Structures are given as structure tokens and as C-alpha cells.
Length: 120
Image 1: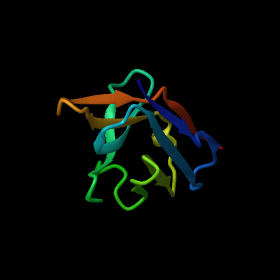
Image 2: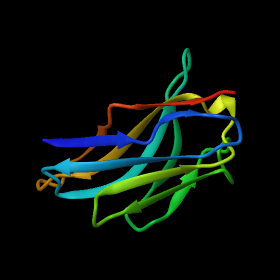
Image 3: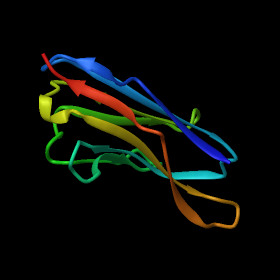
């Protein structure tokens, strides 16, 4: 079994910062991409940022220049540094990891989600 455990969400004022962490554990063979998605009330889940095993990152246009994704492959952990937060960033943030198993089958895994609320 594989688990993704997120931490770091909370309530922050507009303009503030938060750092999310997501650690993968369990029967891990190899991790490909890791990323963060978010889902606001009444909206579909959307990709926020993604990073490859080699460190190449991509971002949604709405967070470019404000959010930074990084990962520690030795710890099987991905981070999301969120700066200059806006009320529209309020959502449940989900960690995602695409993993290979020993049979070279690739599948996605999800964390349980962590609430980020940006409000004064």
C-alpha cells in the first residue's frame, strides 16, 4: 500500500504565505511526477503545479510567480511554497504522485487533501 500524507494548510490573510508538504510512504518502487491540485467549492479540481523526478516544474497561469513547487527524492516528499496568497486561492489542496510499480505499471495516488483558506 502507498500513502500520501499532506500537511501545512490553514488560514492565512491575503498577501501571506503557506508551505504545504506531502510525504509518500509504503510500498514505493519509483515515483515519476508529483504535483498539487486544488478544488474550490463548486468548481472542478484543477492542476496547480507539477514537478518531474528530474526537477522540471510547470505551473498553472494563475499561480505563476507566486507558488514554487519542489521535491526531495530521498524523502519521497513534495512541497508547495505559496506566497502572495489571494482569496481566490482558497481551496482544498490535494497532493498527487504518479508511481511505477515493479511490473512497470504506472498509476496515480492521491492525498486526503488539506484546506487552505485565504481571508482577512
